Image (cartoon, rainbow over all chains, first blue to last red; front, side, top):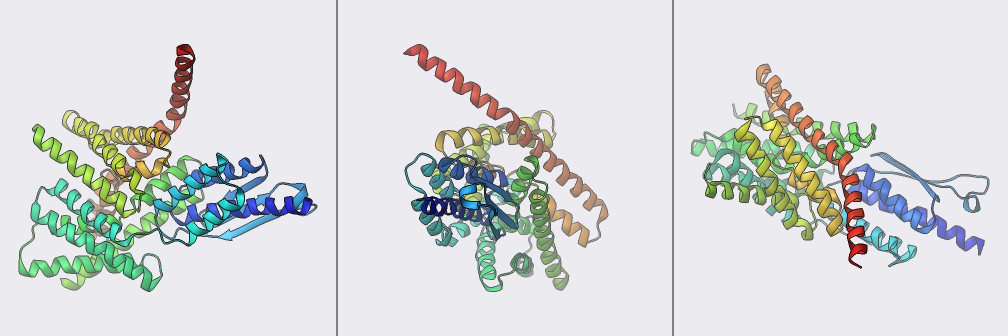
Length: 258
Length: 157
């Protein structure tokens, strides 16, 4: 009996770890991750679990003598933000809410979270269409020029398509964005050989808008506001580095063309 | 600005918000709400631009409205608030200024670099201020609303 209770408490800790990993890897803010761990743990037993989460490390420890005995028990995992996927964030939110409302037990929650982690809940075509709509509407909003908006929309679609391919091929952060911004700038310069584009800068910015790190900036502000002075500045630096890389890619392409 | 142009512009903002929500893989059940919040936020932004000619006050008020509506609908619809808030702020993100900052730096155009850096900092501060105010006030307002609602319900019974 004591052994099965210990196993169940370890399962709770592992479930909290999986939930926090999914949220971290998909760009959630720190408060949501800590709150989700707390909801899951407190639903099973209040004050069972302690957590320490940063953007590269998750530590879940069990504060229970029955499990720990004379030794503390802690689960530690390396992690990082792999992509922004709010679908997975919402899936974890829905599952943890269902568990808190006693609509599922801890084993079912653990299995469901593992499925969410392994599932590819990314729709590439959705992101491509989103890039087209975003670039087209924002560029028209800023320039009131139909040609510039249409070009930016088409290039925004290509931007999302290429960045996905480069991420799968290179598997390195920032490099995909560097290459895509260079390619987009080159395409605009090539079009200018055929016809004049007075709004070429606005077209490039509009096309690159889907890649700009708005989510990372907002999440960084949220984290700093909540007092997470490790994760917040880390995400802010990552967002600024991403923007720097995109600027570098454009400048490299412009330098070659000039 | 006439009413047709204003409505067309709001529709553009609605489309841009939904576009960004699609880019960040937001769940489909929140797409329309996100678009509505984004389009509604354009109202205080335009009002501020036309009255005070200061876009930073407009961004601050728009962020206040986006965060407030995002948190409200998050509680009503049981969706994480950031799923509604982040795409709705797409018009106000200082990403464009940050990009121009970097390009000006590489071009060694220091005047433009300083100007864009100042704009980036001011926009970030305006968004940050909006976030802080709503994060501090909304939980209290929500608790007050729940108290009023429960008193009203028990009075009805």
